Length: 147
Image (cartoon, rainbow, N blue to C red; front, side, top):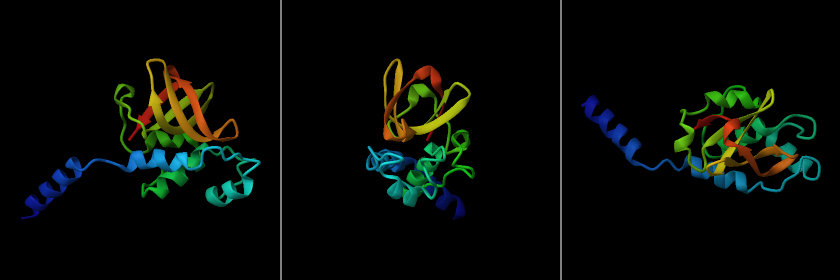
């Protein structure tokens, strides 16, 4: 009986579409345009930190993940910690809504994939030029895709 219940639960989980990542993209888009200085009070209340003084891409992702019922990584404020979020996905199979970790020089950045072309990933995230916005990153900068 336990085996049947387990198999039924597994089937339902696999057959049901995973909408949490589409929801993450949708939630992130609601914050588009908010700037770390101009909208400091609103962002500070949502993120729990002062975005004008703290790197906040990971904090933004933590907010979005929690909003859709996902558990962010333990040190979610650090972009590199998102390398351990969810399950890994090959870049060739990335979908809008997947979490993308990119490397720019010696630092990391995390955001949500909005679109992927042959040469670039369009990512929405926080702390992109001081605001929540869409930015482009070379596919070569992508170090991880997580779902």
